[in-house]
Image (cartoon, rainbow, N blue to C red; front, side):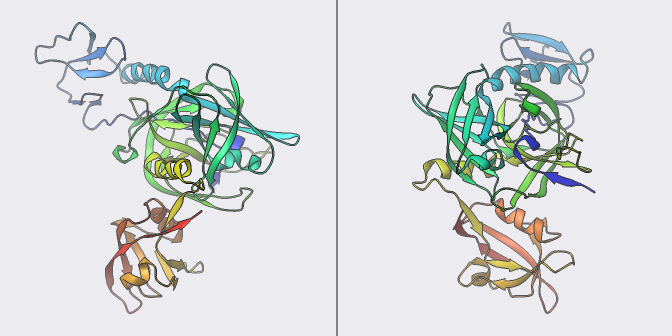
Amino acid sequence: MLKITSSAGKVIVGIVIGASAVGGFATAAGTFSGSTSVICADNRTNALYAAPSNGVCATSRTAISLSQASASTLPATSIKSVVQKVSPSVVTVNVTVGTGGDSGSGSIIQSDANTSYILTNNHVIEAAATSGTIQIELNNGDQITATIVGRDAAYDLAVLKVAKGNLPVIQIGDSGTLSIGDSVIAFGSPLGLAGTVTSGIVSSLNRPVTTGGTASGVNSYVDAIQTDAAINPGNSGGPLTDSLGRLIGVNSAIASTGSSATGQSGNIGLGFAIPINEAKRVYTEIITSPTHTSTRPLLGVYFDTTYTGVGAKVSQLVAGEGAEKAGIPVGAIVTAIDGNRVVDQLSAIVKIRSYAPGTTITVTVTLPSGGSKQFTVKLGSSTN
C-alpha cells in the first residue's frame, strides 16, 4: 500500500535537471542523433553543443567523442555546472515553535536591493503561521530571520520574505516542456544535511497527488511531476530544475510503503513536485496581491464522494458558475478534461486545480441519460 507523505522535515525536496533526450543526447543547442561522433562542451558552462560539420569545435569549447563518452559521463558534466549555478539560490528553512521545530528547503525567487522572497511548501512553515520563528540558512551558512508573506494550503505553497537584498535568484523554467525520461537533480537539506544534491529522471507527468494532515486540515491537490531522484525528509519546498538550472518544480511529497517507528518515511524512488507553471501563478499572486492571497479555479460542481465507478460524478451544481452556464447536468460523470482521462474524483480536482481562473476548458461527460458529450466551460475564481 502506498502512502503519500507531506510534512516539513517529513517530506521531499527535488530539484530537477531536465534535458529532453529523444533519439539521442539532449543539450542546450539541440539533439544529437546516433550518427553524430563529436559534440562540443563549453569550457565555462559545460553546456553541450552540436559540432560543426567539419567536427572541429570553437576555441572556447572542447570536443567530446560520443564513441568514448559513456551515458554517465555526459550527465555528470551537466550536473556539475547546474550545481554550481543553482546552489547559491537554495536555502534551508528552519522552523521553531515552542520547544519543537522542523526543517525544509526553499528557493530564492526574487531579490532587490533590500528584500528577497523565498518559495517553499506551506506544510514546511505552517506551524509558525501564528507563533514561532522561521530562520533561513543561506548556502554560505548565513542565518536570517524570515516572515511569511502569504500561503495557500490547497496548493501547498508559501512565500517567505527576508530583509536582505541582492541575493542570488534561481532562474524560472517551463514545466510544460518536460518529458518522461528527462534527467533531474534534487537540491535541499534532507535530514538537516544542507547542500545535498541527488539526480534521477522524470518518471511520470500529470500524476494526481493529494496530501493532508496539515495543521489547517486542508488537503493539497497537485498535478504532479513524479521523479526517482533521491529525496528524503527535510527536502520539502526545494527546487526542481532542468538541465540549464531553471526551476521547473517544487518538491512536496513522497510515497512510501509504510511508516517507520519515528513516523518518517525515506526515499523509495517515488517523489512528487508541484509544476512551476502552476506554482508561479500562485506565488506571483501572493507577492503582488494587497491581501497576499492567491486564487483558485472553480468549475462550479460538487462531486459525489460515494461514487465508486470510473470518473467523477456531479452531485450538485454551483449556481451561476461555469458548469451550470455550460449546461452540465447533475448526475453527469466527468470522464475527461481537455482530453486528459479522469478516473475518479481526485484526478478531476487535481486537473482542474492545474488551470488558472478564467481558463476555458473542454469537459467530457457521460450524460445521466447515456451517451457522451463535450461541454466548453470557462472556469470561475475563488480565493484561498
